[in-house]
Length: 163
Ligand code: GDP
Ligand code: MG
Image (cartoon, rainbow, N blue to C red):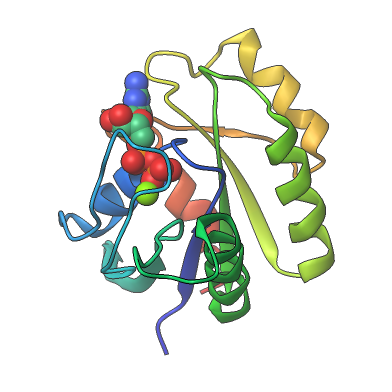
């Protein structure tokens, strides 16, 4: 069985961009609109000879009667339940947000291994701005740039260390 990695985080932090980077595909729809990933939530990834499955979250069906926020929460719960490892994606440009703390609280009680990725950190591997992300209580933040392909390999090595 391939390990399953779920990407979780508030809208616009770069989950779909990271999904595309990890799967080397453009299957997830990346948009400048918060929360808009409409389909194709699963992708195949590979790190050396190791294969894994990635789940993008944050999508919604336009005709959903439950509303976008509830639908996103449902997708997140479903993805976390299916995952062996969760990558919790945050954004160094906006810094920590209230929703990040909510997600951290949710993930703590989900009892899954969680890695904290701080995205949009191109050229910021040693930035003091990464410090505040320790507040989430999710261990050392992994600075990454999904858009520029920085820090992804080391994040994946950490995610797949048990597999
Ligand atoms: P999602 O809502 O979490 O899926 O976020 P998206 O992947 O759709 O990205 C939201 C916005 O952040 C888009 O404008 C992306 O181009 C931008 N973005 C994603 N990754 C990075 C990154 O590593 N660096 C920067 N500067 N922008 C990024
Ligand atoms: Mg998205």
